[in-house]
Image (cartoon, rainbow, N blue to C red; front, side, top):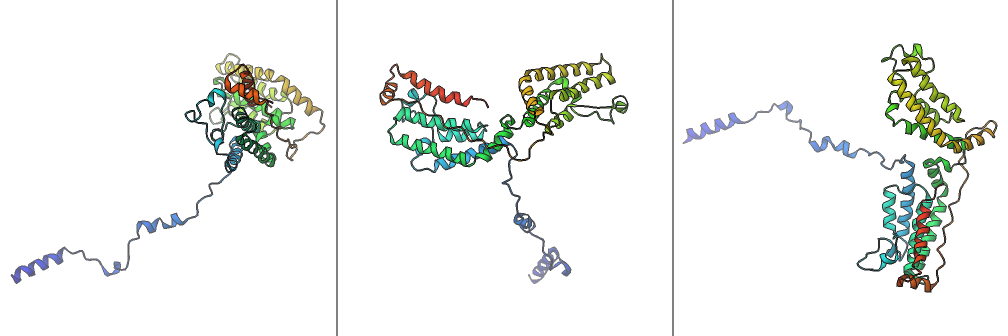
Length: 349
């Protein structure tokens, strides 16, 4: 028995892993220790400024909507009216509106100008007047909601105006900016044509080694667009001179019967038609620029434009509102009220 136990002990020791003393003090680094430096590292600031002006503009409106929801007793305007709880609401109100729907609109960047936002605020108010009457407590709350919305828009007028001009430079008082914006839009639209593909960027000298031996003044659509962004065209003649250069260079290098020349002619014709289509606006901006000697683009912000005053609710008597609810002939007044709100959204500037 003692012999068997001794043999087992010997076998057990032979199977044990022997670690040298030099490695006894070294411990393997745990995986969580390995990543601890990464986890404790300061994260990048995610609150970066969004470059898209329409997103920035809608972010301002979203902030205003959040503040409106905090006004006491405004809960009836937070969500769409439930047809099950108020069965006759959609029979009376043709275009419903609420703060949550407006918030959804900001998420999809529907509001490219403050007037569209104000129009929806007006719609909430006018719907309340039509359904509840002038003297109802909900109408008084709607009045406060509308007034505060206008006040907060006025407080951020300069910030909103900058984004509106960036979205649509035609709102600016800067004639050069408006001229360049139209010309840049023309080039941007032309770039989508299949005929424009060979002329999008400068000719690569590595691919066409002898091109610059024949063409002394190269030109392409990307270069023209850059010049538009830099406000280098003070009139359409300078712009069309570069467009003509694309066609003439193509004829010089490829010949008048080459397929690329046919594409250049199609591109040239397309741009010419767009210039003619916008000739009235372009002529106006050119005239404004030519009347200013030594004109340059001002560095200061454009003149302040106060927001449009809120459109007043049509004057309806209590009797007329009751007739609307009863479905009488005066229901035409309701249609006029709804159309006046809808048309204000379609107004151009």
